[in-house]
Length: 402
Image 1 (cartoon, rainbow, N blue to C red):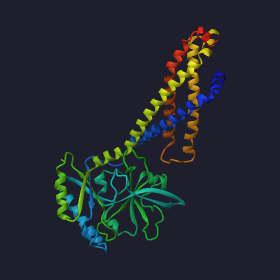
Image 2 (cartoon, rainbow, N blue to C red):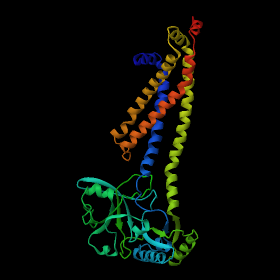
Image 3 (spheres, rainbow, N blue to C red):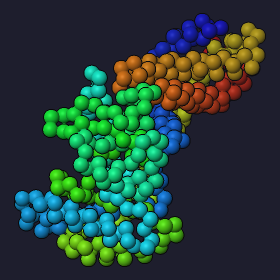
Image 4 (cartoon, rainbow, N blue to C red):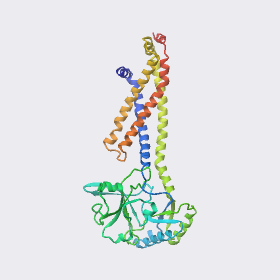
């Protein structure tokens, strides 16, 4: 039966080639959309590593007196103002914890570095934070401790890493108290003082990755002030507190600007940033499949009209309506299989050539199976009505073509 179906498909190879191409292109589009959606879903189920509820971020903009009129870069003066900001904000009643940071959770920008570890390169995202960042973001410390102000006087640079980076560098060994890697010229050696659970700065839709926290001491004169304040407020704090917060900070630094954004709002913006392309792609894929489905119905119908004599002769030779119905469906499944096969050969190049490193084999396989199921379902649905019409052809219909 299979050999007979392949022969029938080959005899109409010119008309079937376009159908196979349409199926292949549709398969690839569905694969991309399904894989992206499964990638986000697979990431969403993982622990985030921090608590975003009841957390606010204040982006600090330096005034002209510090950034422009002070060409020598009086970083110590800026840090003194920044330290006063932290102190004043911490004293406000609705505030449970406050800390400084360079990177904001859920924001797409950030810091990244690559270091040589035992002869191999390790990529990692990074943030520079102050004491209290663990309480402001609700980090879960699983080993060691968080930063202390006394760490600024050490001959080594204290760092806190997440479990991903700990596994990458140390395997199952305890990293606390060990140097992370050989320092670059001019850097103090990094020593691990603590380990937190996997920290996904980019949010729920982003995969796990190596992350490192570096310590920023406000008493140290090197470097400028951080540009963000992360504040944990008490549950039920009204939005009106924002006005009082900005007013208090403006009294400390009149020339600086402050932009307050609750982390739930930053999170919603991050979701919109990632999901908008998925929604657009999904809409395009839906209308593409709709057009392909209508096209398949039209082509199948036209082909069957041209094959009325062939089908009538089959019925005259004793073929039942069910056999004709089954033949048309199986021919369409063969065409779909050829299109899916070509698409699959293209898709498997992704893991073989390591074209997209963030996609796991599990997500790729699930996306591939979802695309296959969608194409077979579409093909069968499109072939049902034309095959039903073909099964109604009577043997006498063949006489019209004699």
